[in-house]
Length: 458
Image (tube, rainbow, N blue to C red; front, side):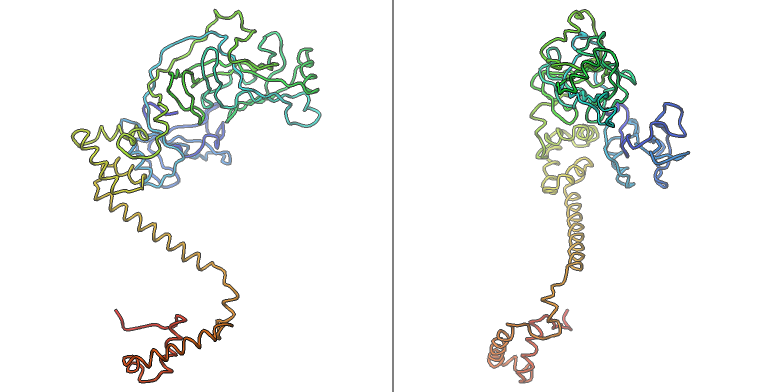
């Protein structure tokens, strides 16, 4: 998620790091420090903070940089990216700073926090003895739940989901007095997955027995929202790599309090019977205002054809250009963009770079020529390398001793007759070869096989 006061460059995935580094306090996964060196010799500016962690294969006092943070008071997004490029610092993702959305407190009935995503219930893949007593539930697949009776189209941002406890209760149909088990394994990646043992009570064992006979069970989750983004009708937002179209809601931050095994899951249009009398119970959450929702039309733009399309694809960069621009008025910006587009041709990456850095059309053209020359040289080197590695055809090498391949003798005879006629018809050739027709024929043969080298020419 973007930070409000600093640009972030992710160098490595947080999942690559230990949850508890050897050098950190208990419960601290990362540490932060300014004015550091990374990768041994790259000096990080004093205004930039390094987020340090310990990789899973490191120990003791060893540490590795996970990300860099560039404060907005010292750095623009363009400046930060330029520093990364100039210092050859590779990054996985760059997120420009983004001001926090305006939020207000809101509330929803507790009954609206029960969800089903066609959730699967099965036995966990463990050894045969324990298999029948251990369940596995895919509680949420990361998709969009359609037409929920309260939230409309709804999805849960996987990056913002947490479990309320390390062991989550597993109930039947969300009834608190019908306890089926608890989780001893909880995973949130591209899905929400839990595993755990069945309890020994009659409810749990009867349900387990039914499942062993093949009865299909579904599941649903009790998820309490902490931060909800409301999506207006005919607008869309992105969540978990998908587009959610309004009217609807996205839980940007949420907690899972309970998982239930159900006969029919939870119909999105129907209130849970376990919470039928809970309309007076409310859950509170921060409501994110609709200040960064994109229209369907905006989502489809992929080519930079105008200043407007540039602004859609690179909103933060465009805002920065306008703030720093010395050109007077929008017409000057449009004229500059048009001239740069002509100079850069179909190289959109170069167009973005030149427009954001305020290059002239002449500078852009020079950069394009240099880039094409570099690509041409690289291609030539690859072709040469390929030719060196190209296998030799035995049919060709068989006659490299100068003998004539089968079928070529007749062809050569025809050539010799033509060369003789050519020699006899040309006074210049006769003078050049001193009247020696055989010398001329020898020359033509050598020339035909590429063995003639002409010297003395400039």
